[in-house]
Length: 200
Image (cartoon, rainbow, N blue to C red; front, side):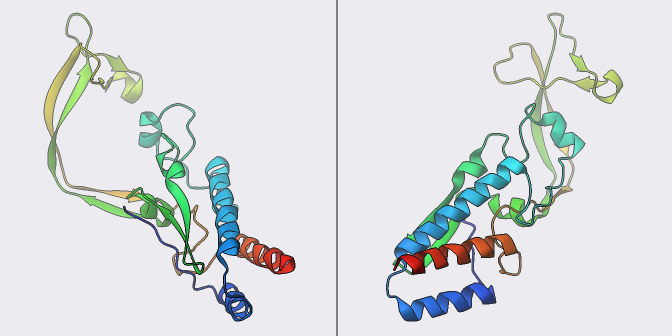
């Protein structure tokens, strides 16, 4: 299982947790509450398409928009990433937010993927006479890709040269690259701590 793990280095949160640790011996219920609250906040970001500071995620490129299902929000084409995020409390002292998707970290932090040259098979749709179907893309020169279920198709092997794919950061986890927690998420965590202490 590939996981994106959050390591808290935020001084304010750590100071509060250390004080809490000195007062109580089992924080499992607190960590479960914090985890659920953070999951709710993460899920809301996929709906609003904003980072933890409320800034809009960088829009999709024109090429991605052309291949994306109509009307689907950013990062939720199939919803796999959104559904994969879970929380786990272990030993009453550790909370881990993780995703089993291998691309979770690069979607959150951003980065560059270097692709080597390769050969690949592509299929384009044809009409009954074998003519390639065209779209309005590129002034009417765009071709229509064929799915496996399309019987009328022309398959060819093409060589794709080496290239880089730049993935912009679209933060949805509560943590920055330096390990600190975004202010609004920090406030949510501390609010859960204060609520929990008030009930004890």
